[in-house]
Image (tube, rainbow over all chains, first blue to last red; front, side, top):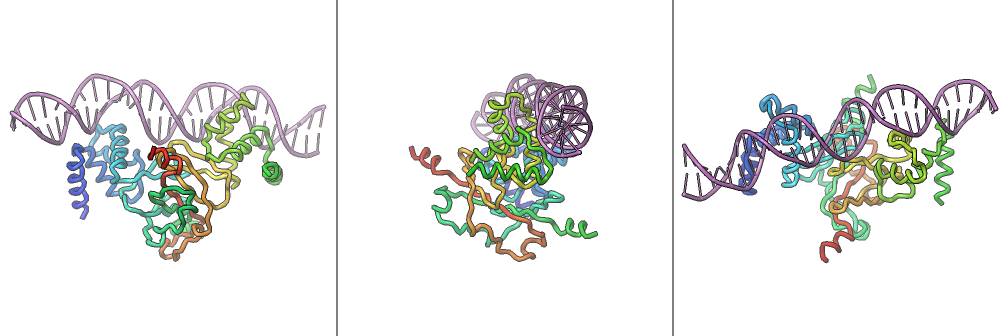
Length: 146
Length: 146
DNA sequence: TATTAAATAAGAATAATTCTCATTTGTCAA
DNA sequence: TTGACAAATGAGAATTATTCTTATTTAATA
């Protein structure tokens, strides 16, 4: 089932006249494989075993490209200096554990509607929105009790 | 009316046994005066005219302290490397202009309820949440048309 | 007003990211 | 297939944001 997304990715690159390079495939694959919203550095390290000569510059530039093309999302959190990346480009929201800094995706139709008038939105032309939820994850709740 | 908040701030520091220094007052004042969600560097520059010897380290440490004490909030945005600070510690949300990177606070009771069960929240113990809205501000909408 | 812990200044150190430019690699047309 | 060429990459320098270190200064309070 992952095969499909890689295939799609290759098709996408072809359509957009973006060269399909080993590095780009590896970076995209690494993002698909992770549910941890990895940083550029995380991805760099993951890939290094297969591509010992890969450069950080390539990772950064590639992630920037992917985001510009709308196939991934860059996300950031207070108290974390490095940006994280998310291979799920669809609308979804985030559960952030304030103790262990884990980030989980959360999809729920209830969160996808913005029940506000244009006026209430200060006349902004809205593109999208994301709900960031701070909390304590089940694992950290258990730790606390122990 | 701003006088009140400064007075409150001083009271607060006293209660918490935090020395009331010129630097702390200036930093808090600078945050109150700005609606722009300034960065540490912005605040450093603002204060420099009155306190030519102020150090960046002081600004950073002070902002960190204020946040730990709950009187300000640290916020961060994708595509912006520097953290921003917000003197409004109450629950509120953000309108982010993707073109000019302006950030406006948005308060609306409709946004303050999370209509989800504990289960839908992956059993997180929720602390709070913030709705981040991406859009185009009125000024940039006009620019585009012109 | 003297004491003392807390806070600050200055700049070095670190972390994250971007830039530069010489070299390598996909792509596409012949 | 191969050759040409634009696109992409690698290596490391440069930049930006932030944190750390330490000697000096200052606010609180007795």
